[in-house]
Image (cartoon, rainbow, N blue to C red; front, top):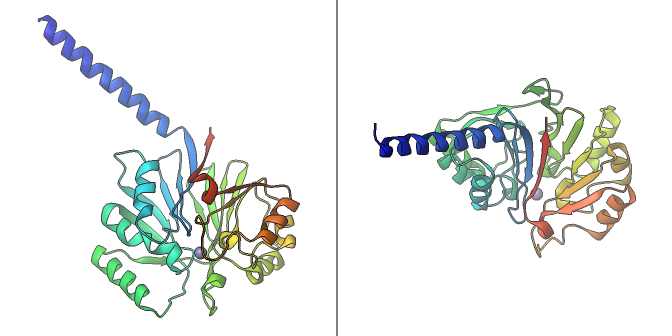
Amino acid sequence: MNKKYYFSAFFVLTVLIVLFFTLRREEDYLAVNFLDVGQGDAILIRSPEGLNILIDGGPDNKLLYQVADKLPWWERTIDYLIITHYHTDHYVGFMDLLDKYEVKHILVTANEPNNFLYYQWLEKLKEKNIKLSIVKAGEDFVVSPELHWQVLMADSEHEDLNENSLVVKLSYRETDFLLMGDLPISGEQKLLASGIDLDSELLKVGHHGSKYSSSAEFLSAVSPEICVIQSGFDNKFGHPHPETIARLEAVNCQIKNTQDLGSISFTFSY
Ligand SMILES: [Zn+2]
């Protein structure tokens, strides 16, 4: 055997070792990414087992770039895609995503809006041969002994689509993440009345920081340490509202906004 052979073998071995450790690192932590998709919501969670959960898809194909940026280059599967409700800033980005990624499950409420965009969405699902799975409040999705998420609310009967927001509490070991969609105060009151344990370390603030969400009573029940707002720079709605910011400050949570920071990522190690 000549020197060239040894060099090639050494080179291949080095590449394999580097690759092995790169892949392994991906599996050592939970990543929760609040993606900067402008004015809209999109939250990408990657579990230590390599499971990908995407909650909402923002208003356009900015989602694709953000998802590609956060996932390993070889990853082409989204295991769970959750649509909190059918407003454009929460699901239009999924139209293009379905062309690029294999989506295994799509979780929604039973709400079916009567508009052109929704029919386009149904056409897209037919083309990709994907069925929607309707979830109900109280359902628990267990990923591992350390990671599960529970559906806290999945109303479908309201005229105002925000009130039909699917609310999810994701729990990883001792840390809880409360993801509110665009639920208004009326929905928060329903959650409070149900007696569900809302206490969470991290709150995805409802409705981009609108003043019609995040009541003082609700925030005190959640008692979050970190409050994430997903809103677009210079958005026409004036989100987040100064009154909401004041209410968040009153419960002493650390406020983080994608408008100021771009995508916001948290990682939790074993
Ligand atoms: Zn919204």
